[in-house]
Length: 114
Length: 110
Image (cartoon, rainbow over all chains, first blue to last red; front, side, top):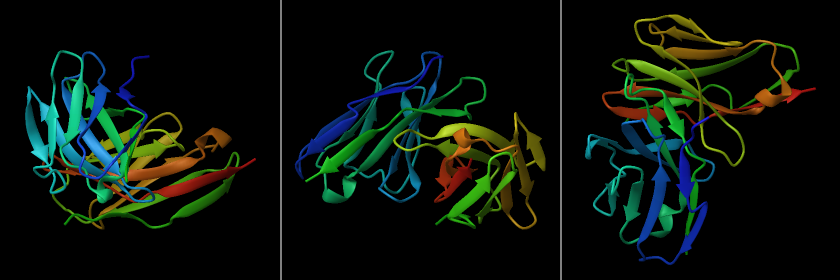
């Protein structure tokens, strides 16, 4: 069964450093999403991406964040200058071209900012 | 901001019993609702969804009920199994954004 994959599974970085989180969505999916989940808290929507552009973003997704689909398979989330409060689990998701609704989540990348 | 919340943080049920997990939402403009299951160390897993023009939708062993009058969503799991033990949370779509609840931890007692 096809699945969304994410790398790395864990990332430790120093405050102020840039990180890039990588995702490979399911191959025929056209809608892509990033979410984060701070430990013990709810999943929070960051951004949705369709047709090579951001379709929606939340208040969390400020200028420190950017997304990119550099090729036909990868979908990345970049945090330019990490802050302590960026420590969280980051989930990528993708959804089917027909409905654009049923989202399939990856296993997540646990980011720890020191 | 939006508010999607769960009534109970934990729920324990005997194996074979039915489980009901509840969720309240606040945005009357939300048009689509989803239930997810999240096991420890894994990403959320889609269980079932429902559009706002429906009151009930059934899947395999799961049923979602939507009461728009009181902005309430519930997930019913029939014949709960040990493998159903996980955190369950609802999500709503308002516009193009998704808002998630905190989650209910379901424990199935063998």
